[in-house]
Amino acid sequence: MNHALKSTLAPQAFGRVAVLFGGKSAERAVSLKSGQAVLEALQSAGVDAFGIDVGDDLLERLGRERIDRAFIVLHGRGGEDGSMQGLLECVGIPYTGSGVLASALAMDKLRTKQVWQSLGLPTPRHAVPTSESDCRAAARDLGFPLIVKPAHEGSSIGMAKVNDIDELIAAWLSARSHDPQVLVEQWIQGPEFTVALLRGQVLPPIGLGTPHSFYDYDAKYLASDTQYRIPCGLDSSKEEELKALCARACEAVGVQGWARVDVMQDAEGRFWLLEVNTVPGMTDHSLVPMAARAAGLDFQQLVLAVLADSVEARG
Image (cartoon, rainbow, N blue to C red; front, side):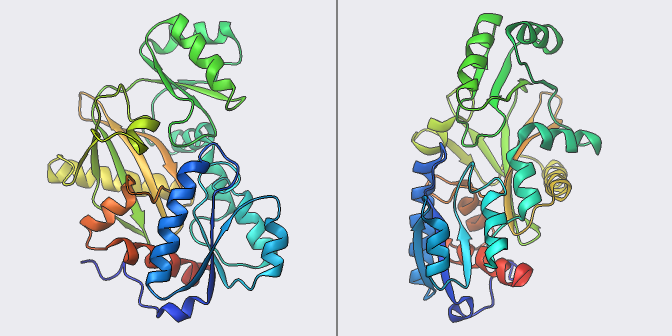
């Protein structure tokens, strides 16, 4: 086990911990599962933890309850986009994970890509159409197949792979129901990897396999035929290249504490950065717990390590 990852703090040192989950985003159902798992792990470790299903009364609850720090397990908008982080900073409650800027930036897939591009980091070519004629121009420029994504959603919500202009326009219109800004991205044909970072260290990469056309919401949370490869299947030099790229990708965005980077590899072996998740899933299907296990941390130790970082970074 890598002992630098483990928390050395006694459970009592964290004080009273509020686990924030649920919320109103499209990822509410996933967040409820993640939050329950985190809460149970903290309580079983002896931490004085309680849960808050985030609603309209949150500010009143934060003022009423004695809270020494918050464990954020809110996925998507309202929890992962900097707004919750800013609120907690305003009321003086330390919290887990990235700060306001990194959270807001990573939630915006388009601006994350623009930061990566400015630093010469590889990310697929893209367009941001605002009309059907823009969709046609994107198709001419990028070619098919393409992937269509709402720019500010997670968990693959609203995403679709398209193979012709009619599919592209339909998927663009559908994605707009989730987000007014829609990203159309070059399709990278090849294996997908996900790489978790914890307390400044890169965990073992995971290779993903699914019979679906891509690693969609169903493959992530519901399917029983999704394949998770640890070791990821790369030779040692390519694995080190992947880990170094993901560390640079997170540094560029300003990530703190923990995160997960999604990457594709093309037929020539080149890696392409897709996105960073600053509040990764913590369900029984989730990837960060798998990567932590491969690094020698069980779920409880992982949760305590994430929480410990809130003490050391912002305590």
